[in-house]
Image (cartoon, rainbow, N blue to C red; front, top):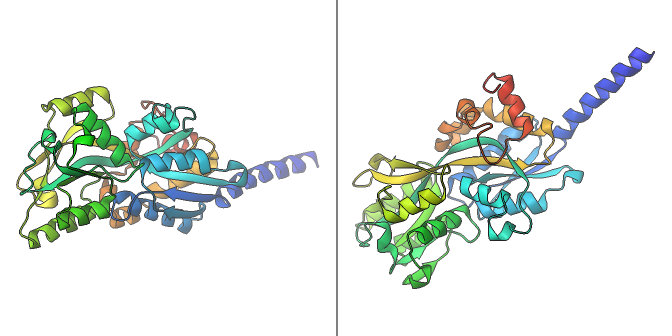
Length: 331
């Protein structure tokens, strides 16, 4: 009888663990419609629902900074409600360490589930804007991204490193991806910042729109030799790498030197191990579905994430690590 009782207890504990994951409510904070975050997060929610991981819903947000605030302020572990999020690495780093002004008194307690894909810094303009380098933005009409977004956070840090005063812009806008596209196409701004994967669908569409207007889309080059870029890279060591956006991506006249950041899919520290494990497992077992819907997800890969485990300032969630160990990718 004692053995039977013991086995019943073990089964009950296992059942609670599985049920906790399945009965959880997960809100996935993404980004603005038109950006890769939105479509990526939407697909993750569908994968979680179809595989019985949790009741998941993707939501539009202003992206990274807002997403980290949602993880910090809206997660209610006691009610089995968790906010997961797509986040830029520099934003995640500053918010978890409390170096961002909105997190100075209360840092976010968050872990990484996996690395999504490298984000590329875009400064989008046209061939008629007169903007050929970062410094040329000083007296122009510029959008730095939606307020509270990771795009805005990176843009302002890059401009600060380049000693460009936003107060001296001819016009300073704070628009999301879709609104920035429309403003550039309508000629109400000269350039805008965007951090996203390749290709970002809304920019592909913008290139076609501009062509119909007799304009050609251009990306402002960000070579490591540029003083502002060099200063930025020095300040954010280990968080960014020099890269190139090929001319074939958006039909630009030439390849464009740029900066790359690995996006992170994150969850609260309080996420149950089983929920984090089942989420990670479901996504990596359904990569074809994810990649068919989101082109940048071609870089979402177990091996690409595993190489970061144990090497990031922000720890990976134990549930995710469990999956990578199970696959023999992490010791």
